[in-house]
Image 1 (cartoon, rainbow, N blue to C red):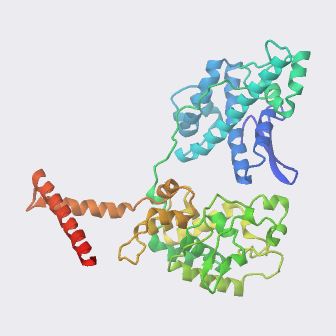
Image 2 (image 1 turned 90 degrees about the horizontal axis):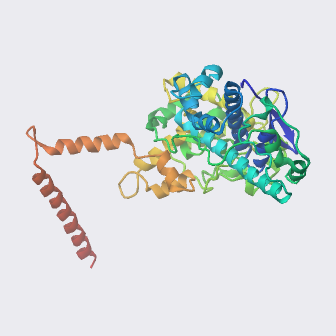
Image 3 (image 1 turned 90 degrees about the vertical axis):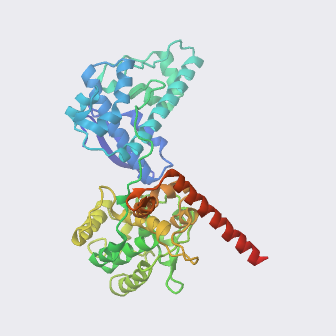
Length: 464
C-alpha cells in the first residue's frame, strides 16, 4: 500500500493498535507516540487517523529522499503542498508535490476526503510541537543550552544520527516514551501550515437516494434480513452502524417503535459481554442526540413485516446475544452482522442498486438513505396543518444531530421545489410576453403584504 513505510496491526491490552515501520524496518517512534495518544478514541477514529498519518509520513520520507537533508523552507513547502498532492496528483503544479506524485501515485482524492486526512495530520503536528516544547523545557532544566531539536532532520531513519550527549540523555529520560518522537522520529517546525484545502464541502443533493426507488431497492435485497435492515434505514434515517447494532430489546413490535441506544450507556449488557474485546472495539456511536426514532411510511410497515419474516425464517435464536441482524451462513452463522466488513455490505447494496438502475455518486451507498430521509422530512412530510415539511429543529431531533448545522448540511431544502418556485415567479413577472416594470412588482408585493395584515387583523377580531 505504501512505498517507504509498512503499517501493521497489533493487539495491545485487548485493543487493536497500529505500528509503522520505516524504510530500514525499524519502528517509527513518532507514529507510535501518535497512535498511543489516540488510545481513548473510538476504534474507527484510531484506525483512520493512523492510516492517514502513515500515508503522510510515506509522502514526507519520499520528499526527504528527493532532497537528502531538508531545510526548514523545503519542509514547509512539502507540508503545504500535501493537499495539492492528494487532490491533483500528477496534475499538481508545485514542487515537491508533482515529483512525488510521479513516484507514489496518490490516486484520486475527493475534496471531502481531505478534511479527515488533514484533521489527523494537524493532530500529529500539534502533538509533535507540544513534545518539542516539553523536551526543550526538560533540556533547559537539566542545564542544556542547545537541546537535540534539529528541525532540519525530517526523517532520521534515512539520515545519519550522532550519539546523544550525556546531558541530552538525562533530559530525555524524563520524557520517556514521548521523548522518542524527538529522538527517533520526524521532527516538525512550529507554525507549519498544511496549505489551503476546503474546510466545508457544499452539499451534493444527488447523494440522497431517490424516494420513489426505495421500494424497488428493498425488493432487490436477497434476504429478509437485508430487506428489513434496508427498510429500517429508509424508515428511520439512522446511520448504518446504528442499524446494525440494534438489539432485540430495542424493538417494540406492538407499539411499532424502535430505540437507538448508545452502547456506552449499557456497557454491561449481556449482548456486549458475548463479544471479544476486539469485537467490542468495533461498536460505534457517533453522538446521536436522541434514542427516539420517527419511522416514516411506507418503509416502517415494510420493516416490521420483513422483520417478522426474518425472525420466522432466517434468525437463529441461540441465546448467546441479542443483536437483531446476524450472519446467515458460513462459519460465523448466528454471529452479529455488524462484525462484517464495510466492503461486503457496500457490495451487497451496490448490486441491488445496479439491479434497479440507480446510480449514486461515489461514496454515497447506504448513507444515501439517510440523506433521503432528511430531504423528505424537510420538504414532503405531511403536517397536520395541511402544509408539508417539518421544521429544521424537529428534523434535527429525528436525525439525532447534536447541532442544527449538521442537519442543514445533510438535508438542504429540495432543489426541485426551489426550481418550481423560481419558474412560477418568472411566469408572474410577464404580461403578454413582456416583463412587468419594477414599480408594478413593488406594488404587487405591497398589496400582498397588506392582504396578509388584513387577514391577521380579521383573525384577531374573530378571537376577541
